[in-house]
Length: 158
Image (cartoon, rainbow, N blue to C red; front, side, top):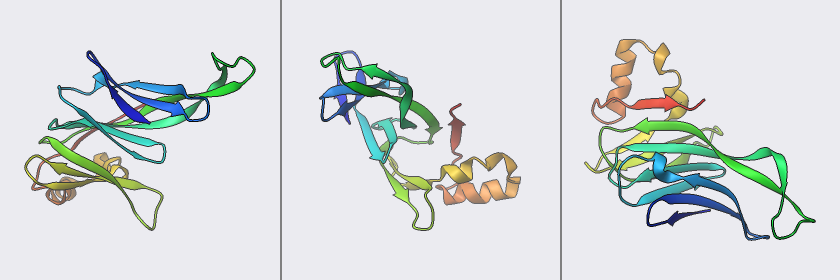
């Protein structure tokens, strides 16, 4: 899997290393702003963002339900793959870098984000999904833990 930068648009491509065929393509024009894109992977999870921009997106690479014939070798079947958007999030400042962090006691992971103002944020999507259930004082306590009271806006994919 790699980011391929073009003159007009960037994309993440995933190759089958045996057949050397592209099995999944993700157009990165969905990321706002300009500049270089960065990508981080953990298993089938793919995080992408533009350097110094506030927004990042998280996708899951998964197998599609149908099998397609390979264009070069008609006798061989290949499984089609696709990217499904899981999360779109916005920080109050630009991203310099990000990394996945997996907890020892869980299969869940959070994302560490290093920002342009030199703050390190831990973004835990398992906790964010319960944000609507939190009382106001619990929200303000969590905001402080995420970086000095800056709110984290998270939009979940369908």
